Image 1: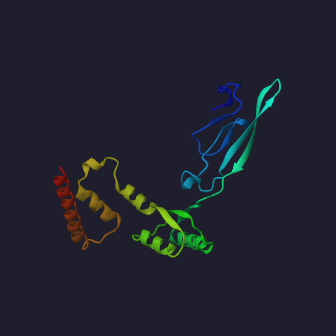
Image 2: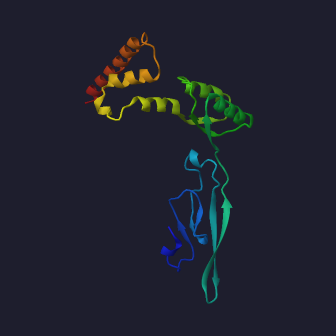
Image 3: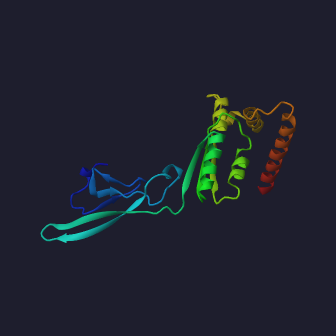
Length: 199
């Protein structure tokens, strides 16, 4: 928005929704307050503050507002760790060396297919004060999306088709597939039985 849409009679106007604190048209007294805490890992490096506003009565001129920004301390550090396995494990080692108590989001972007990514990550933070809150494996996401044709929808596929596509994406060998498919079908059947009983 622009400052012109608000009446000049406001001594101070705080706007919401935007997470980053900022002035409107460089006005000290017309601001987006911003969020005092990071609202997600994308805001982990943002500087957070709150405004302390003082109002002084000026004879013959009404009220004047003065604004002081007060830094908000970081109560819980958020860290976004991105890269291939070597880059991720190196960064976790660096954080561990500083006794980090951070909450981590890990985004894997490597070419190597790592089926046990979660287990590796949990092992890498074992004995530290860090906690992994989110893991995003771009390698698997890209491969699955690459397997889906534009004309396909989930409605066109049955549960076995979906499972077979997952096996394809994970490069599961043909000799392992029959046993995995049987186990999958047993699991699906037992879920259907539970649903029927629940009705």
